[in-house]
Image: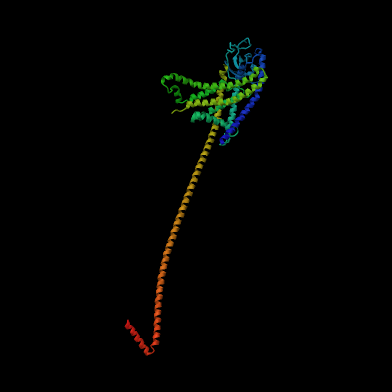
Length: 376
Length: 164
């Protein structure tokens, strides 16, 4: 009876969270749409040949990609610092120097080196502009073939990364303080929001997969779970503090997958390695089995990487495409439909945000569990 | 596809940031949180175990009390029973001895009465004989005042004797 009461309480909280997020979505797409209209009209002024057709793909990819400046609203941007490691050492300047040019037309000269930015990538500029006024040499697929300096800029994704780390630290140190303040008492406030999730990670993810050795991997699993979840949610917020597609960025998911890979490989016991190099099959089967098993070591984390990246990116593209319907049909009357769909997808994305964090964590636990499993 | 190519800068930042985050959270959040949760769970388990033990103790005590009550009751019954038998025996014995005593007394009284009767009869006989002798003396004294009658009497007596 007590348990069901607690559960009901949790469900109520979940409903509150969902409602709040739905509220976000129902308000923001309108603003979002307006902003984009402004941008699109600006673009169409600049390029008269693109006037007749609106390219959803290009638009969506631009929005989910990393950026050197953070779009706030209308023509307002937060210009983020550009840090480059070039042939002549470190170079840094503000991304405002590019004048929001993303076609390689504005050259920034620092330390005797010239840089241009195209599709949010920085290249060493060519000596002369091509027929479109770009200081780049483009191949037939319109890809720049210029050399690139090492780009260590504080981009939009890096900012979101730092922001999410600050949020995570503030939230969980606060939670930890709650435990210190009320030793042995029932949780309260933020603590009681997070405790069920921490217990969920411990009891439903770590314990079943890792057995009695679960405690050693709890910090990693909890960190990875909350990092992914919080960033998925931040990505769902369409305006300033959120909006970056951090967990939908292959670099981020790659590092997370590499972390799981390292934990699996470095914690693998003799049974794990024996299973890979000397499986219990006739010796002539080794020719097939060993390469397959070896391949499996790498496919598991790669699947982790692709799954998270693809799911989150797909969600973003879906919402963006639905919003873009307004511009595709070039009619404001389509807005209610696309907003309704965007709200619906937004709600699903909220679920996906949690599910993907859960899946990444449980699969990490599973892979580590397979590596540390004791056989008798 | 550009999306599938990780940007070097973000790889570096993500690695550093994630490791730092994990280190900081592990040290300042997960360790105290997990320890506190574990501690609390243990204390709850302990409390539940204690409650269970107390319950068992209670049941044991109740059972013991029941047992004690039962044995006390049995003992009381036994004592009562014994007392009853004892009482019955005493009463019976008393009755018996009273009876024998009574019988003895009656017997004695009977003998006494017999004796008294005998004594009274003997006394009566003595009295009767004395009285009859007295009467006889007085009658004789009257009749033997003249010689003729005396002779007659002796003659009659002698006659009688001869008849015997």
